[in-house]
Amino acid sequence: MKTASKNTFDWTVIGAGPAGIAAMGKLLDQGIHPHNIAWIDPYFKVGDFGAQWHPVSSNTKVKRFTQFLLACKSFNYSEIANDFLLNQLDADKTCLLSFMVEPLQRITEQFKEKVICLQDFANKIHREQQQWSIQLSQALINSKKVILATGAEPKTLDYSALKHITLAQALDKNQLPQICNQEDTVALFGSSHSAIIAIRHLLACNVKEVVNFYRNPLRYAVDQGDWILYDDTGLKGTTATWARENMDGNLPARLSRFLATDETIQQQLPRCNKAVYAIGFAPRNSLIIDGFTPSAYNKYNGMIAPGLFGLGIAFPEENIDRLGNLEYRVGLWKFMDYLNRVMPVWLEGR
Image 1 (tube, rainbow, N blue to C red):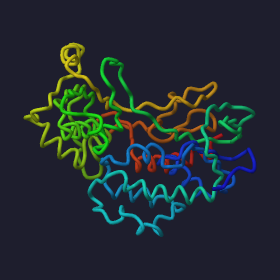
Image 2: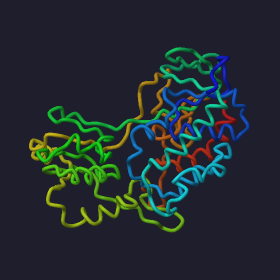
Image 3: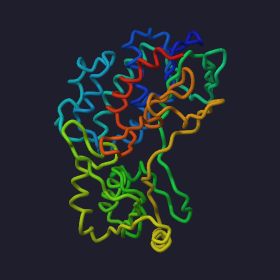
Image 4: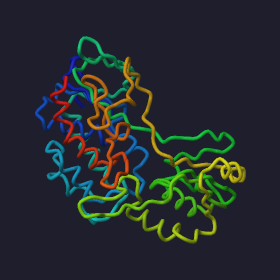
């Protein structure tokens, strides 16, 4: 791993999840010298994608993952593709995210031998003399431009009387049986892709009942040929198939569903003893940015401040589809597609 012998860089990428890896790939493809790029992450293990979500079924087809891996010449994926099971899967089906973690980790190891890596936490950044000063736990560096690919965490609700099952636990069918049993009545908030997977896993654990509180009806992605209706909020793949078979019409005996009004929550929640919150993600707030509010980023080009850009699940692109539906584009290929369009702006921006 290349370590710092200087403290000033042209570019710094904070975060080594899929979005951070994509940013690194595009910078190297643009000819930025590796020694002029600092890459900061405490682990370099493909972020939460690698640490928490690898047992989860994707809502992305394998061909989109492959498209992501081939989008950067510096990934060198065409040369190493045969080393991974991903390359042997049906391109038109979904898969476990673990199949994508393996090639991303290999690409990470390749980049660690090229760019300057700082295995540390970035705690605070501030603007000073037309560059960014980045305070780490063990060092201080400066950078002309910074890309934040810092990720996000599942949102939670404040029902303190219920034992909280984390979303990562609920999505791991091997871990969940150690947390739930036949005596549990579990409240599950949400109706997204992750919510449906969690419901399926809870029922497989033979919990007494799953009580699903939802604000929006089930949505299914619909392929329109050259675009997809509900591409970012609709159910896809095996999750969509299971939902159609088990949640459209008659529900399984141990599943009940209620519109999440104050009245229904007040009526139904007292019979639950545990809860899962599958209600979306919120950006991590562990990084302090003096004088700027990251949540106020430009949702069309990712700009937060001069020379400071956001990418990935914490800074998704806003999109209005052809029927006027507002969605946020989240997914590996969507991050790469977005980066393809905004990187020229970032390179020229001051």
